[in-house]
Image (cartoon, rainbow, N blue to C red; front, top):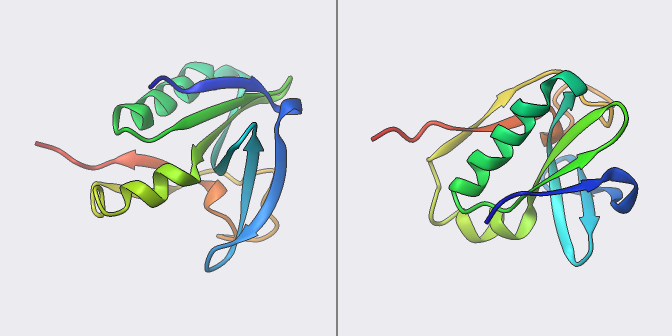
Amino acid sequence: MLPIVIPEKLAVIFKYWQSEIKVGMRYQYELYTHLRNYTLDQRLEAYDDAYQLSEMSLKACITVTNKGYTLWQSLRTIASKEADFPNNYQISQQAMSPYQTSDNAFMSDNVLTSIAKS
C-alpha cells in the first residue's frame, strides 16, 4: 500500500497520552502518530521515508503545507505490527518538531528507521 498524501488543512491534529504526551492526527476514519517534519527542500526524503514504512506493511500518511511536509504512521498498524516487528525498527532522534513543547516530549521528534538487515 502506497502512502497517502493530503493537505494538512484536511487533517485534525490532537494530542494523546501513551506513556507520555504525543501528537496525533485524524484523517477520515484513521488515526496517525506524528513521526517527523520535513522542509520543502526535503520532499523526496519525506516520500522515501513514507515508502519505506509502506514496504514494512505500515500505513503512512504525508501532510503538506506551504512550509513543508509531515510524516505520520497509522496507530492501527503500529498496534497490529508490534507482534510481527518487535525488534525490526528503532526510533532515532531528529530535529525539533513544531508540535514539541520540551525535549523528548513526543514521538513526533523521531523518524522510524529500519535496522533489519538480512
